[in-house]
Length: 367
Image 1: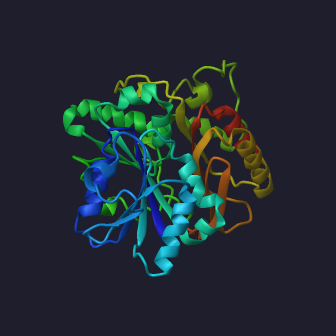
Image 2: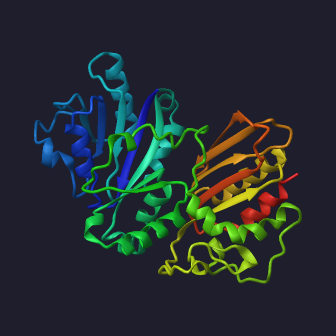
Image 3: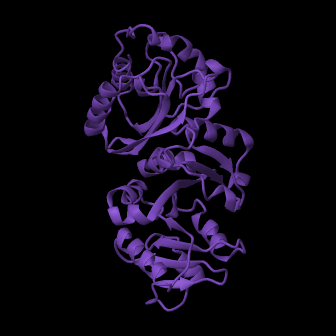
């Protein structure tokens, strides 16, 4: 299986700089770079001013670059066929999406098309975030929020243009939109190649990384929010239409504002938010399957990414699941070790998700 990395980020976030490095640096890897052929920062203009009819261009370091003039799955199919025929040689693929694109449909290609799914393995979605302009872009463009929500790893670029407090506030904002993506500050797009590949963000058995700070911040709320591990939730009469998509119900603690922590962050009412669900009680497999199926049918388009490690009744191994929109996969992972405390951890990232409805529904699936 050929691993694929999707590189996304808004216009000017540094994707072209990073791609130039991949295409020219002596890293010893054979990488095929597929570039969406529209948008202001077209890599062709800079380094591929060659025969414009040529679909695939060989770079000096063994990489190849091709531009998409059509359907992604067709281009991938062509590349795979050329590789099998010995016409081109590559070990992995990087797809750059245009800065205005939602990476969701690109990711879905790897689940929907059987031929593509049989030859390519989606490794990770990496999103570049321009430190200086990110807050404005996140406020103005939902597509930028989607790019953050889909990410397995976030690189903050152009950090030298802002101060440390600005970076800390931006990190906090990104964390609450997507707690499962590692966030790293990189200068001049100089991310280590090793931090771009083999992240296994879409590997079901990879460990569920939820940023520990996100959980700590959530912890005091959860210590009593999860009294529902023994008995059901009691909800106050909140007006759930306003900002409770990311609130810990009637605990008066909104985990994306961070007010109880002595550090004051600007309040951003981002449409894309995340929440983490945890329980020490096992799930009933049938109930959970029915409930998640219903949620995906109704809210699938609003769910960007979701992932979890589940404690299921009658199963001595961890069950891992994850998905993009309506497409969900699950798998058996390692056995629960005697020393481990069995529990379930799930993270949901989406647009205006009905958090209370989902958490109550999950509670109802517990044994």
